[in-house]
Length: 320
Image (cartoon, rainbow, N blue to C red; front, side, top):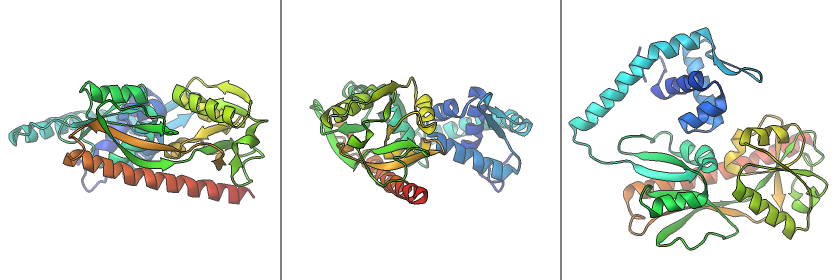
């Protein structure tokens, strides 16, 4: 079977299909592949386009399952992919490549929404390149850099609340303002921008991230808004509740591609903007690999903010 050849089949797309077969859901497969769900869907769509037949079926009841054609492709490609990995390792050893990857630590939203999509074409786990590790929180990512288990931390900084980085050099990548995520049937969906004070009679869906919940609580208290709060247990439930019109929620531009089809993004005013930053040990900021990574993240972040803003504008115009 040709890999990256005239058939249009490449190893990354085959690995994505394998992950779906092994995990039974798109969300779990995306986590396994360390990419966003939208990125996983794109890889699967391109693979199906190359093969010419459906490879994955999805349903609310059974999750994601492989079609008979998908099973054949996964079974037949497993040995090929293993041989390809061994061949790459042998090639590196032949050249005496002793470089280790640049280790990047980031919380899951940053990994899913920004980092992997930004470096997908250059990501090489296990060799020279970038190795991405998911941290439990922003603070855990910073700790990983301080104790030497990561070279760079990437995270969000709300309202300039980044604490003294303790000997780390921090660089701002880009800034963004939260969007309001609402169901398409909501009265707030078609009225242009929404001030946070206009959400006083809405239920706020609180996502699983404790940092984001703290930020939202502070913003609502500052605006003297005391809404009903509904705490979701995971990201999938959070998006489902908003999509169903149960309440409204905060949406980061970098995660806009993960929202459900009926969810509408509306520019949100009256809340503090936030910044994405990268931190590394003093002296590493001029490392060529670090500089290349930060440049990629900066460009990708600004592009995502712009695309999310245009998406929000188009949605409100269409509803009106």
